[in-house]
Length: 469
Ligand code: NAD
Image (cartoon, rainbow, N blue to C red; front, top):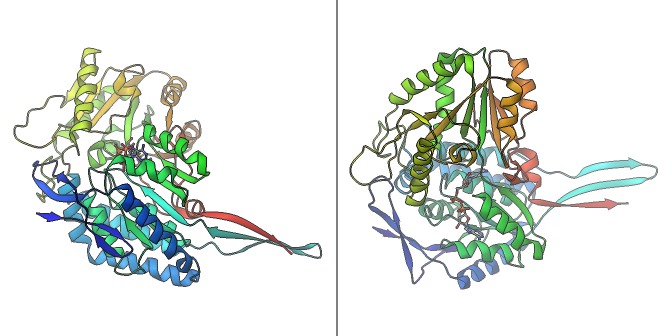
């Protein structure tokens, strides 16, 4: 079993204490993760700040080439990273699992490498010339969750370094190993100190959020933690990008043919076993097609192999950790007491180790039930019957979250009209959660602050300076 170290200033830095990282499918120990102290954080800030001086002075072309080299490095080690993700996170190697996650990381890295923020000339006439510059911020602190440890790390690191910042990343204590390995690989192609990794417990994230030399926090995780970060960061006026929880609603219009939408509905809800920020988490279905959608979705669900992610046949794996597993069990048990009708799943039948919970569909609930109102972040979907479309839109919007949403219909114009009434950052039609590197992604309401991806996401890693001459 391997003992991992921190990566600070391009070197591996061992720690005195460690944390066991366990495979959620087998409970076996995957590796020993380092437990950084606040002194390690200070070291990392010092070297990142020092590296910033030269890194920010490189030309845009030089940094673009460096980002391309990072993408290539990840691609060259794709299988190794995928195996490690599966062992610590639980998602299968196949389907939209860890190989897909690493492929996404490569695609996002390449796309980000090709973006640029050249000087914009706002005015050039007899009254004078006005230029808008986008300048890097300095040291960026990245704080990541446990559901996509490599992909989200790339979403944070690449735009930061592309625009001339240096980075300290703190991965989730549940899944630190693949991020450490990623940063180790990145350091094979970047100058020391540009990207550093300090793994450890939650208090490191809080210390990063208040650190005077960290100029920005890019965070992906729960709403509660994002709110704490925003408060802590206020004193030093940090720039913030916060990607937080979602409770995405889907609205199925009466004109659908259920057999044509069940596959996309299923994967929209159960990508990574539902442990995806922008997964479909509440489904509102018109009464005229409700029963048929329920039956067809339940049939489809029964065909999906759930198992240890290291088995090539598995398409879904376990829940990543006990805390999340217990939350899912609690929400389902409560839903049953509230009159929820279990269509499939809903009971733990599997013996042996691992946080396996069956994919579960529950009908006959509505807003006011905890399973509908709260983010389940697991393999459970409430299917809610509605009669009137305006009522469905009101119910969909009746939630503090506003990350994603979807509309399902054969009439694309009608679907787009409904989409525009949904209070969320992204809306998909006849699919759900299909993010891409050229389209900004972020939450409205309590789901986030700022956006990632594309030019809008890149610009969040810069400050504007205007030069008047
Ligand atoms: P979490 O908020 O518990 O932890 C996320 C990270 O924050 C971890 O690295 C953790 O150590 C750190 N942290 C904890 N307390 C902190 C503090 N006080 N200050 C600073 N950092 C602190 O979230 P999680 O359980 O790892 O992830 C699940 C949540 O993430 C879900 O709500 C999900 O919707 C959300 N998520 C959102 C997106 C998105 O893009 N919007 C993507 C993935 C996950």
